[in-house]
Length: 288
Image 1: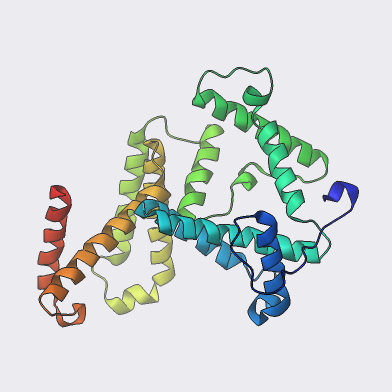
Image 2: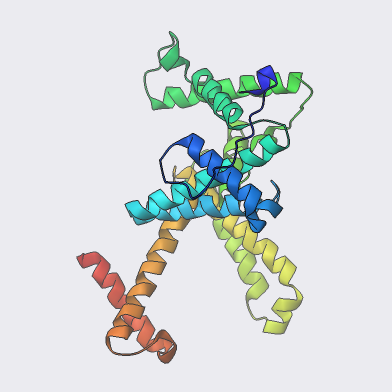
C-alpha cells in the first residue's frame, strides 16, 4: 500500500528460522523480525544508520573495483539492507513503506525517460543527459513552487568530499564560473601547491602543528584544485582515487605475501626491503 490511500503496511515479523527465498516480501518480514527481537536492531534510528549507509556504499564501490562476484553480491545485499532497514522504521512511524519507495522510484524513472516511454527522440547518451537535467530542473521548480526555495549549489548531493567537490565545480561551470580550458585549472593547482609548500617549508614540526588549521586549509585547496583538473579531463576524481587505493592495497599485499614466503612478517621488515618489494610489485603488475 502507499501513502496515496493512507494505508501504510508494516511488515509482519517472520516466525521461526526463515529460509533464504530471494523474495522481497520475505526479506521485509525478516527485517521486521530483527526489529522485534534483536537488541541492536531495536535500538537503531534512521539517524543512527546514516554512517552505515555511507560505509556500505563505499564498500560496494570497492567490491566493484575488485571484480569479485561474491563480494559484489554481498555488498549489494548490504546496501539493500540499509534500504529495507530504513523502510521498516519509517513504516513503524506511520510515514511510508517500501511500496511507497518503489512507487516513487518507478514514477521518477518513467518521468525522467520520456525518450523511452513517450514520443521524444534523443539521438545519443549526451542528449539523454541534457534532457535528464532539464527534467530535474522542472522538478526543482515544482518543489520551489511548494515553498522549498534552493540556491544553485544546494542541489549538490551528499557524498564524499571528492564527489561533492567535483559536483560543486560542475554546477558552477554550468553557470559560467570556470576556465575555458585545462590550462587554467593546472595553473591553479600549481598555485595552491606552492601555497601549501610555503606553509611547510623551513618550518619545524612544532611550527607546523601550531599553524595546523592554515595547513589544513591549504591542503584542502590543493585537493579541490586537483579535482578540478580531473573534471576538466572528464575523469571522475572519486573513481580515480579509489583506483589508486585499490592499487596501493594490491601492491602492499604483494609485499606481505613475498615476506611471508621467506618466513617474515611485515613488522620484521624495514623500509629499504619494503621499498624494493614495492618496485617488484610494480614490475609484477606490468608483466601480468
